[in-house]
Image (cartoon, rainbow, N blue to C red; front, top):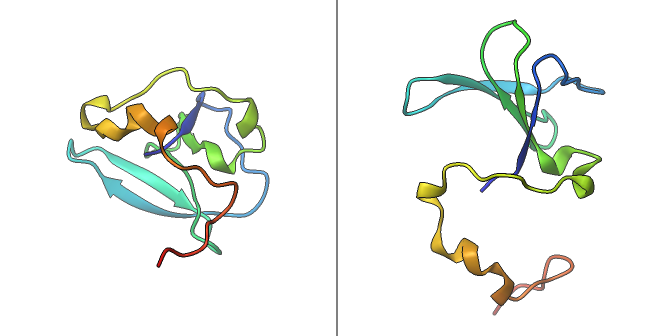
Length: 101
């Protein structure tokens, strides 16, 4: 499961650093660069190949503004797990819980 914000073509700018990228080939045959932090491996974004201005699917967790962003649509719901509809019924923790025994 991913939460992404789609940056319009020509608007995405990295403030610092240079990510590592690898090219992922989808089942459709489309090739998409996937970018990660070279130090910790955090996923940053995916985009399309080429140098033209293009949209970027930026992972919400890496954005300073993430608390201001509310979901507006869902994609790929045909493969969504049934438990997604009932997340309010599970135990929640403020931080990493102690290991279970």
